[in-house]
Length: 245
Image (cartoon, rainbow, N blue to C red):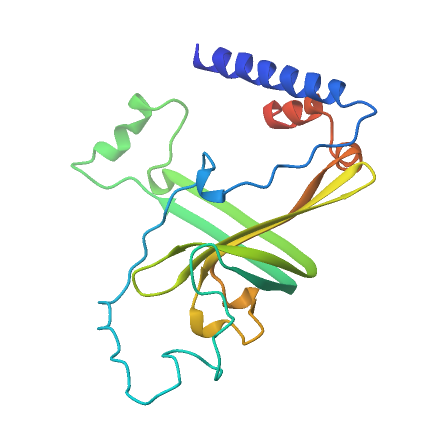
Protein backbone atom coordinates (compact mmCIF):
# COMPACT_ATOMS: atom_id res chain seq x y z
CA UNK A 1 0.00 0.00 0.00
CA UNK A 2 2.85 2.36 0.78
CA UNK A 3 4.34 1.88 -2.70
CA UNK A 4 0.99 2.66 -4.32
CA UNK A 5 0.70 5.78 -2.17
CA UNK A 6 4.11 6.92 -3.35
CA UNK A 7 3.12 6.36 -6.98
CA UNK A 8 -0.12 8.28 -6.52
CA UNK A 9 1.69 11.16 -4.80
CA UNK A 10 4.31 11.20 -7.56
CA UNK A 11 1.61 11.28 -10.22
CA UNK A 12 -0.21 14.17 -8.51
CA UNK A 13 3.01 16.12 -8.10
CA UNK A 14 3.98 15.54 -11.71
CA UNK A 15 0.54 16.60 -12.92
CA UNK A 16 0.70 19.77 -10.84
CA UNK A 17 4.14 20.59 -12.21
CA UNK A 18 2.97 19.92 -15.77
CA UNK A 19 -0.08 22.15 -15.32
CA UNK A 20 2.11 24.93 -13.92
CA UNK A 21 4.40 24.67 -16.93
CA UNK A 22 1.42 24.72 -19.31
CA UNK A 23 0.18 27.91 -17.67
CA UNK A 24 3.59 29.52 -18.19
CA UNK A 25 3.80 28.74 -21.91
CA UNK A 26 4.77 31.95 -23.68
CA UNK A 27 5.17 33.80 -20.37
CA UNK A 28 8.34 34.88 -18.66
CA UNK A 29 9.29 32.99 -15.47
CA UNK A 30 8.20 34.68 -12.27
CA UNK A 31 10.72 35.97 -9.77
CA UNK A 32 10.37 35.48 -6.03
CA UNK A 33 9.23 38.42 -3.96
CA UNK A 34 11.66 40.23 -1.71
CA UNK A 35 10.59 39.54 1.87
CA UNK A 36 11.90 39.00 5.36
CA UNK A 37 13.88 35.69 5.33
CA UNK A 38 12.97 35.12 8.98
CA UNK A 39 9.31 34.83 7.95
CA UNK A 40 9.92 32.01 5.50
CA UNK A 41 8.31 28.68 6.30
CA UNK A 42 11.62 26.82 6.37
CA UNK A 43 13.48 29.40 8.48
CA UNK A 44 14.68 28.21 11.88
CA UNK A 45 17.11 29.99 14.22
CA UNK A 46 20.22 27.90 14.74
CA UNK A 47 22.17 27.16 17.89
CA UNK A 48 25.95 27.21 17.99
CA UNK A 49 28.52 25.98 20.53
CA UNK A 50 29.92 29.17 22.01
CA UNK A 51 32.20 30.06 24.94
CA UNK A 52 31.01 32.10 27.88
CA UNK A 53 30.22 35.71 26.92
CA UNK A 54 32.89 38.25 27.77
CA UNK A 55 32.09 41.04 30.23
CA UNK A 56 31.23 44.38 28.60
CA UNK A 57 34.20 46.66 28.04
CA UNK A 58 34.42 49.74 30.20
CA UNK A 59 34.44 53.10 28.43
CA UNK A 60 37.77 54.88 28.53
CA UNK A 61 37.80 58.45 29.71
CA UNK A 62 39.02 61.12 27.29
CA UNK A 63 38.94 58.61 24.39
CA UNK A 64 37.41 59.25 20.97
CA UNK A 65 37.76 55.65 19.81
CA UNK A 66 34.88 53.22 19.84
CA UNK A 67 35.52 49.68 21.14
CA UNK A 68 35.98 47.36 18.16
CA UNK A 69 36.16 50.17 15.61
CA UNK A 70 38.86 50.13 12.93
CA UNK A 71 38.45 53.76 11.92
CA UNK A 72 38.49 57.04 13.77
CA UNK A 73 34.88 57.65 12.88
CA UNK A 74 31.91 55.31 13.11
CA UNK A 75 32.53 51.79 11.85
CA UNK A 76 30.58 51.29 8.62
CA UNK A 77 30.71 47.50 8.66
CA UNK A 78 27.61 45.40 9.17
CA UNK A 79 27.13 44.72 12.88
CA UNK A 80 23.42 44.46 13.65
CA UNK A 81 20.47 42.34 12.60
CA UNK A 82 19.21 43.70 9.31
CA UNK A 83 22.57 45.10 8.20
CA UNK A 84 23.90 44.13 4.78
CA UNK A 85 27.37 42.95 3.80
CA UNK A 86 28.89 41.76 0.54
CA UNK A 87 30.05 38.20 0.11
CA UNK A 88 32.67 37.50 -2.52
CA UNK A 89 32.01 33.99 -3.80
CA UNK A 90 35.06 32.43 -5.39
CA UNK A 91 35.10 28.71 -6.05
CA UNK A 92 37.92 27.20 -8.08
CA UNK A 93 37.95 23.48 -7.35
CA UNK A 94 39.75 20.85 -9.36
CA UNK A 95 39.87 17.19 -8.45
CA UNK A 96 41.59 14.36 -10.25
CA UNK A 97 41.63 10.87 -8.79
CA UNK A 98 43.04 7.68 -10.27
CA UNK A 99 42.47 4.44 -8.42
CA UNK A 100 43.52 0.97 -9.50
CA UNK A 101 43.10 -2.20 -7.46
CA UNK A 102 44.00 -5.79 -8.21
CA UNK A 103 43.25 -8.81 -6.06
CA UNK A 104 44.15 -12.42 -6.79
CA UNK A 105 43.75 -15.49 -4.60
CA UNK A 106 44.34 -19.20 -5.22
CA UNK A 107 43.01 -21.81 -2.78
CA UNK A 108 43.51 -25.56 -2.59
CA UNK A 109 42.20 -27.79 0.17
CA UNK A 110 42.68 -31.57 0.43
CA UNK A 111 40.80 -33.44 3.16
CA UNK A 112 41.07 -37.17 3.81
CA UNK A 113 38.93 -39.39 6.00
CA UNK A 114 40.19 -39.83 9.58
CA UNK A 115 40.94 -43.29 10.82
CA UNK A 116 38.35 -44.20 13.45
CA UNK A 117 38.21 -47.91 14.39
CA UNK A 118 38.50 -48.85 10.73
CA UNK A 119 35.17 -47.18 9.87
CA UNK A 120 36.83 -45.18 7.09
CA UNK A 121 36.75 -48.35 4.96
CA UNK A 122 32.96 -48.47 5.29
CA UNK A 123 32.42 -45.14 3.46
CA UNK A 124 31.22 -47.04 0.39
CA UNK A 125 28.11 -48.03 2.29
CA UNK A 126 27.21 -44.44 3.23
CA UNK A 127 28.39 -42.58 0.12
CA UNK A 128 27.61 -43.37 -3.52
CA UNK A 129 30.34 -44.51 -5.90
CA UNK A 130 33.72 -45.65 -4.69
CA UNK A 131 35.06 -42.98 -2.31
CA UNK A 132 38.78 -42.89 -1.60
CA UNK A 133 39.43 -42.37 2.13
CA UNK A 134 42.80 -40.80 1.32
CA UNK A 135 41.16 -38.06 -0.75
CA UNK A 136 37.71 -37.41 0.63
CA UNK A 137 37.57 -33.73 -0.44
CA UNK A 138 39.66 -31.99 -3.08
CA UNK A 139 38.72 -28.29 -3.38
CA UNK A 140 40.49 -25.87 -5.70
CA UNK A 141 39.52 -22.30 -6.42
CA UNK A 142 40.83 -19.18 -8.11
CA UNK A 143 39.57 -15.65 -7.51
CA UNK A 144 40.82 -12.60 -9.40
CA UNK A 145 39.43 -9.07 -9.23
CA UNK A 146 40.72 -5.97 -10.99
CA UNK A 147 39.20 -2.51 -10.91
CA UNK A 148 40.13 0.87 -12.31
CA UNK A 149 38.46 4.21 -11.56
CA UNK A 150 39.14 7.75 -12.76
CA UNK A 151 37.48 10.98 -11.60
CA UNK A 152 38.14 14.36 -13.20
CA UNK A 153 36.14 17.39 -12.06
CA UNK A 154 36.66 21.14 -12.28
CA UNK A 155 34.34 23.88 -11.08
CA UNK A 156 34.89 27.63 -11.16
CA UNK A 157 32.45 30.27 -9.92
CA UNK A 158 33.26 33.88 -9.09
CA UNK A 159 30.61 36.44 -8.22
CA UNK A 160 29.42 38.75 -5.44
CA UNK A 161 26.16 38.75 -3.54
CA UNK A 162 24.69 40.92 -0.81
CA UNK A 163 23.73 39.07 2.37
CA UNK A 164 21.62 40.07 5.34
CA UNK A 165 22.45 39.50 9.01
CA UNK A 166 19.49 37.51 10.34
CA UNK A 167 20.80 36.53 13.77
CA UNK A 168 23.61 37.34 16.20
CA UNK A 169 24.89 34.36 18.18
CA UNK A 170 25.84 34.60 21.87
CA UNK A 171 29.57 34.74 21.03
CA UNK A 172 29.04 37.61 18.59
CA UNK A 173 29.17 35.69 15.31
CA UNK A 174 26.69 36.64 12.60
CA UNK A 175 24.25 34.33 10.84
CA UNK A 176 23.87 35.61 7.27
CA UNK A 177 21.52 34.79 4.45
CA UNK A 178 21.39 36.22 0.96
CA UNK A 179 19.68 35.44 -2.31
CA UNK A 180 19.87 37.02 -5.73
CA UNK A 181 17.85 36.41 -8.87
CA UNK A 182 18.78 37.56 -12.37
CA UNK A 183 16.29 37.25 -15.20
CA UNK A 184 17.64 37.20 -18.76
CA UNK A 185 14.99 36.63 -21.44
CA UNK A 186 13.12 33.49 -20.33
CA UNK A 187 15.69 32.20 -17.84
CA UNK A 188 16.07 33.10 -14.15
CA UNK A 189 19.48 32.54 -12.56
CA UNK A 190 19.54 32.13 -8.78
CA UNK A 191 22.46 32.68 -6.42
CA UNK A 192 22.04 32.05 -2.69
CA UNK A 193 24.33 31.81 0.32
CA UNK A 194 23.87 31.22 4.04
CA UNK A 195 26.21 30.52 6.93
CA UNK A 196 28.03 31.94 9.95
CA UNK A 197 30.75 34.62 9.84
CA UNK A 198 32.98 36.30 12.40
CA UNK A 199 32.80 40.09 12.67
CA UNK A 200 36.63 40.19 12.65
CA UNK A 201 36.69 38.63 9.16
CA UNK A 202 34.62 41.41 7.60
CA UNK A 203 36.92 43.81 5.72
CA UNK A 204 36.79 47.55 6.15
CA UNK A 205 34.90 47.78 2.86
CA UNK A 206 32.15 45.59 4.36
CA UNK A 207 33.13 42.52 2.29
CA UNK A 208 33.90 38.94 3.27
CA UNK A 209 35.14 35.99 1.24
CA UNK A 210 33.04 32.85 0.94
CA UNK A 211 35.97 30.80 2.26
CA UNK A 212 35.53 32.59 5.61
CA UNK A 213 31.87 31.57 5.94
CA UNK A 214 31.40 28.64 8.30
CA UNK A 215 28.67 26.08 7.51
CA UNK A 216 28.38 27.78 4.11
CA UNK A 217 25.52 26.73 1.87
CA UNK A 218 26.03 28.12 -1.63
CA UNK A 219 23.66 27.42 -4.50
CA UNK A 220 23.99 28.53 -8.09
CA UNK A 221 21.29 27.46 -10.50
CA UNK A 222 18.10 28.63 -12.07
CA UNK A 223 14.89 27.79 -13.83
CA UNK A 224 13.29 28.63 -17.13
CA UNK A 225 13.12 27.39 -20.69
CA UNK A 226 16.83 26.55 -20.99
CA UNK A 227 16.81 24.54 -17.75
CA UNK A 228 13.68 22.66 -18.86
CA UNK A 229 15.28 21.69 -22.16
CA UNK A 230 18.44 20.45 -20.43
CA UNK A 231 16.49 18.31 -17.96
CA UNK A 232 15.12 14.88 -19.01
CA UNK A 233 11.37 14.45 -19.00
CA UNK A 234 9.83 13.37 -15.69
CA UNK A 235 8.78 10.06 -17.23
CA UNK A 236 12.40 9.27 -18.08
CA UNK A 237 13.46 10.23 -14.55
CA UNK A 238 10.85 7.86 -13.06
CA UNK A 239 12.03 5.04 -15.29
CA UNK A 240 15.67 5.69 -14.30
CA UNK A 241 14.70 5.44 -10.63
CA UNK A 242 12.51 2.34 -10.90
CA UNK A 243 14.49 0.38 -13.49
CA UNK A 244 16.87 -2.17 -11.88
CA UNK A 245 19.01 -2.36 -15.06
